[in-house]
Structure formats: C-alpha cells, structure tokens
Length: 253
Image (cartoon, rainbow, N blue to C red; front, side, top):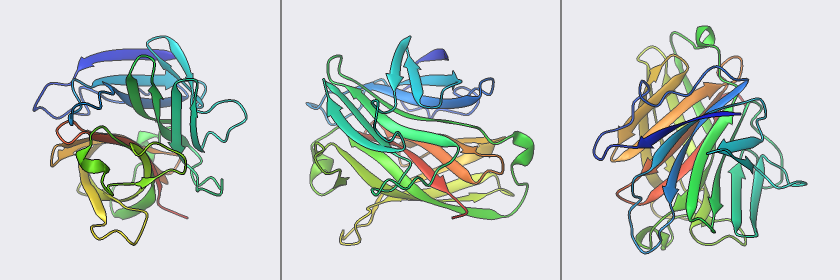
C-alpha cells in the first residue's frame, strides 16, 4: 500500500481537490483525515490529510502502520469494536449486516494508546469518463460520526449500542448536480424522534470523479465510486465545532 502524507491543513483555508486529491493509481483509492483525540477541548486541532492507494480495500496503511478496517471475523462493512485500546466503526451496511455498498468502505479508526483518530474512505473510483455530464442524482446512506467535544454530546447523535457517546451513526442525504458540477446535502439523525434532524450541511464542487468544498466551517472531501457513479463517499471535518466523520451513500437501491 502506498501513502502520501500531507501537512496540517491551513487554518481558515478550505482544502481543495487540487491540493488534496484522491490518487488514481491503485486498484482502491481514498483519503483520510487524522487528528489528535483530545477531549478536554471542543476543537479539533491541526488535522492532517492522508492520500491512500492500495490493492486491499479492507486495509489502511497510516504512516507505514497496517490498520485492518475490521478485526478478523467481523463484517468490515458494518462494525463497532472496542478492543485492546483500538476502536473500529464502519457503516457500509445496515445494523442487520446487509451491505448496501459494493465499491467502497468508510469508517473511523481510533488508537487510544497514541490518541490518534482517523476518518477515512477507500474504494474503486468511478472512471472519469463515466461521470454523468448532466442531470441530478440523489444519494442516501449512512455515516460514521465522531464528536470531539462535550457541547455536542447532549443528544447530538444516535450512539452505537455499547459505544462511547463520542461515536455514533447518522444518515446522509446528498444530491449531485452533474451539469452545475456541485454536490450538496446534509447529515441527519437516523432517529425521527429528534427535534432538530439536521446535524450539519455539506457542499462541494465536482472535479472529474471527485469533489471538495466547505459549508459552515465543515470541510468535505469525497469522490464517486463504482463503474457508473452509483456510490458516493466522503470524509468531513469541522475543526471549530469538533466533529468529523466518513460516509457511504448510494443512488440506485
């Protein structure tokens, strides 16, 4: 697996597709945000961007360290495991284990020993020539969600059973306008009982088979996956409010 490490994102400057583009050289390609998990502050400080390229969709390599998306014997598409100081959360399938993604993985990995958290996507990018030139497509899916502060903990997310309150699963509803070359959407509570259903808004500009942008301080970097762009995935981070995550979404169910 090949990894290229970038330095910290500049304060006040959104990441761009040009600066932090997902590589296209491997069989499976992706991107990850890395940050320190300091819970005594509400902010995420100095996140880094890692560009991923690999022949194994179920393995990440961060700074030369192999990270299995899920421990052996666990469904890599949907898992929450907290063991030996490591937390794995991925949401490419429903709670019942039925996988809805075919071409990518998303999730969060946290190593409690070194205090580092990673949110990532990785998969088979849509060939650029197969990205639609016109029309719209709506993508629905799930997101692994991580809160790095106390302020958002009060009812902010639907916690995974057995998970710390800082981890959870939320819904994602995105629309791609291929003619205008934009993506826009929102993160939503999976529980209809929540009074305010919207957690955050996301938006970006499409460039080739990828997109990036910033909305209300939430930075987004993502891409289209699968032969016909039937899947979309992204990582997002809000340094000021202290939340981050990764999502998978599908247009044709």
